[in-house]
Image 1 (cartoon, rainbow over the protein chains, first blue to last red):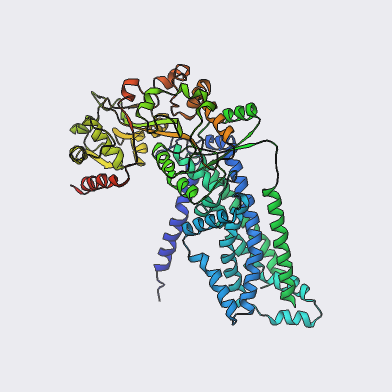
Image 2: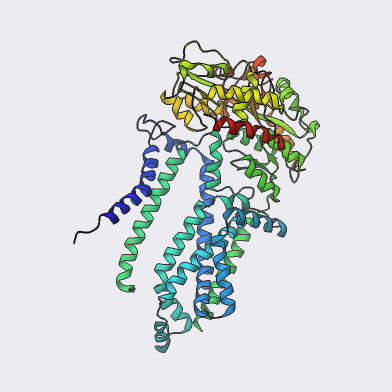
Length: 262
Length: 352
């Protein structure tokens, strides 16, 4: 029987839609023209300009700092939350907990941004990095919890019991058995949290305070003067960084998978 | 119990992290006061900020917003911590009516005397009670010098059938109907139904010659020669001119839209004195001239004009002749009367 061509065509389209815009962006970052419409020769000038823009680097620094802290906090909170949800799945309290975890995924961002801002104002909290981190954790926790929960549902808890039988303390069992086996799920959840935090604009805009402008806020504001291909250059650098990280982490997890096993 | 252990560890870690955070961000009481400016990106020359900081022994922290409406929504919801803000004039009126601004103490801003009185005559806050104009731009006509014969600086250019299909006007009802109102000699902010109907008829006539109404692609279009004549924002056109020297920009002789971002002080500002000093500093003629050269928008400071370079003085995208500027107006927020424009604009867009 002949295999259907359909999946290939769909895959082809999906790949084109995903990667073609990125390709354009990368190519345009080397275009001497400001208006991407026409190719006016190869140039590094946007990269040069980028390195002379302290405001952009300041914003990038803020963004990365926030993302790292948010990833850590939401990983911890989200994992704990997933453990509770899984362990006590039948209790009414945990079912309520599940709803609470689920809600941020369906609440429109603008609503969340405004309501968080109003809550911070009412509580008299000074807006700044701390409020951005709190806001990001608020929605990142949900993603982490759900990803880890998915992982836990396939998890064989008899292994933990076996470890305890063989003399491991609760702490040892958690650290040496549970955590390593959850690691792929945690890595995926962490990447999601990191990405969400780095590119969030709407919520961040509302809860940001003086001195905590992040990269997305900065980039949107540049529209006033017509966003320059400097942004393309910056995105290209970020892409390069992301790809390197992914490739390196894949290499690492491959060698880890040999001994750790799944 | 392993889970309890894990829980204890996680909570401990969270508490430590939270403590670290608040210590890292909340603390750091410096003796140097900080002025917080909430503005558009790249909207002041960095060297000037550094100069202000050293002259006043303070720190200037700049944060950016991307639209007047987003900034308004945020402040309206209660966000504080910003001292000086630079909204567009119509937004200043709204913020003032919502009691979000402080009246300015002009004894602390002696350099307001340098502000261009010709501009103030058409400004919304003529007495500078709550705002001092900061940067002006305008909306005019750009065209390709080598391709458009017999160009005249008038909105009637859109009637030229020989340019049919190669012209673009802005997809913005206030700008485009405003151009027609000016062409007919009426006010940009007219709410007279008869004047508006007449302006609507003019735009319909122009529409027959236009390729489209459009706000973004016209830049690429005129740079590549696809369009010969476009209605556009001076700031945009200046960028395109850098790539295609054949493009010229003019404000039609009937006048058009001026747009101004103003310096205001938030009601909740903490560094009120410093905020006044900052506004005063930006209107020092030398500073204003230097800032204009950097931003490429015009700071309406008449004593700065003679200090501007030839390139700026002779560029109608930045510097308008006084007699033309006098005919221009600033778009005011019309509130409910906006509906009159919406109706006419819908008719224009729908009509074939």
